[in-house]
Image (tube, rainbow, N blue to C red; front, side):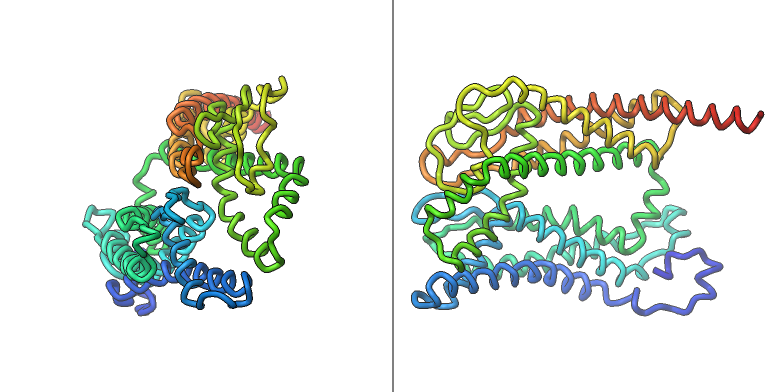
Length: 418
């Protein structure tokens, strides 16, 4: 990133060719590598699962490879048909792994092409810099090329995955995680951030901290709920009559849906809850369930019927998490103005609510025939409740932290004058 250093320092620094590698080639290969990284994992799991199922007595390794490739496409929103039954749920565990690969490879691409384009002084003077945009575009081209080849080789008329959805999800990963990673790796993000008002950066940081904290709390609540009725999960596994190999692969595949369960739990804690089949409801104030498939994660569901009185108090968790997250975030961006503290917390909460609403939209889908075609959070209700709960909690956290910082500042001023 020597081209982004101040002029006097850059003059005394030898040219670093490592940061001026061919942009088009590096970005395209980086995007392809990001896609291949997770694809290889899925292919390996598919082959291992095929072998462990019956020691390879039926089918060929190609069948295992096709199953792994279809799993990779499913993580990119393709959906598929199994014995004529549509499955559209996205395993967010695999999608998160793909996003992490895009971030890591995107960061390396950004570092490798950071020497292209104008330096920091020229960017500050208003000169246009297309380095990040160009690198992101070719990064997406490489990623889409792998996705298209995988689709062509793995898709069949029986499975019928959607190429349009694969392209859409791939582009989404590249223009979010990829773009940000390339910006950070190339040093442009630091330059651009200098032009963003502190209040905007503080609100953005608060929103991300709220979302991260709330997902962590939701994961803990889900783990506790599953542990309380872990015997049911074990009983489900035993009734499936899986061997050691099959059980291992099945457990690994189940783990890819834990992030989905986290979003379901977050929707539950907010109040709207979620559905596990048509005409069902799981919320802190009401639980209406029908017949359920034998799936171990469903052991975490509360019992059917009236809910205990204490579950209603779980609705206090979202604003409490938001208040704590905003207070912790404001330690990095301190302020002594009441309006700044309140606005940062409120805007950050609204941003976190919007992101959680988007997660709720993609966390559910069809998982089977009949009534199981409707499984997932009530996304629109989750969006409204999340913005409200996080906004109120963020407002409270911002005001309380501002009070504490004003109090600390006043005490420091008195001590200095004493």
